[in-house]
Image (cartoon, rainbow over all chains, first blue to last red; front, side, top):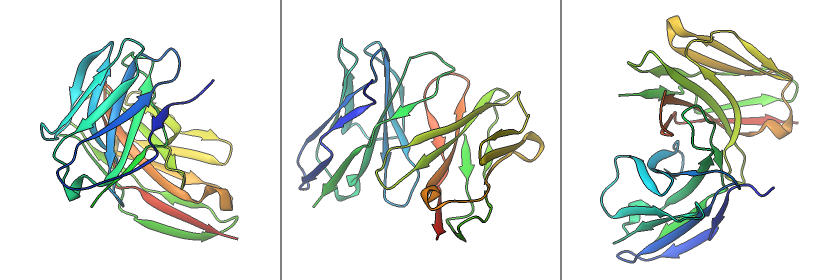
Length: 113
Length: 114
């Protein structure tokens, strides 16, 4: 079975642009979470979606938004990009229960110039 | 608020040496989960272990072992007889009883030299 897949793997944008990152969870997983990992730091929680509804949001500005589709895949959107948005964006999926371990994808490396 | 501290930023050892990674956490919750993840250069976070707050039994899995001490809010990780393939960044993380929000520490980079 395929693991969590993310696309694209790398992306270069300029300040002020918009970006969309995509994530396909493991088959059968209904929950998707997004994390931002700045170089040299631990991942920071951005969003969790379960059954297409937002179930949690981290301390990120409104420029960050996400959604989950009926097939449980997800998109993370970031508007008005800043240099500080440069990071590895990780997607994780789980079955959806409260006692679940997360399976992470390899991430999308976003560089904002 | 929850917080995880990994005081060691980088550890360098020679192959076959043991290495212990420290993790200290802060939470006001009585029920919580602790995790360790490995991040190789590929970027993917690989799950190693999950422990709930009511289970203080130490655990051994192959060359990996974990020491959970609730009294000191620590969840340390030891790699025995390290190998070059163990070179990676290791993250300790904390999660509430519900939800998928993991609070990660800053990570410890382990470099195993042949």
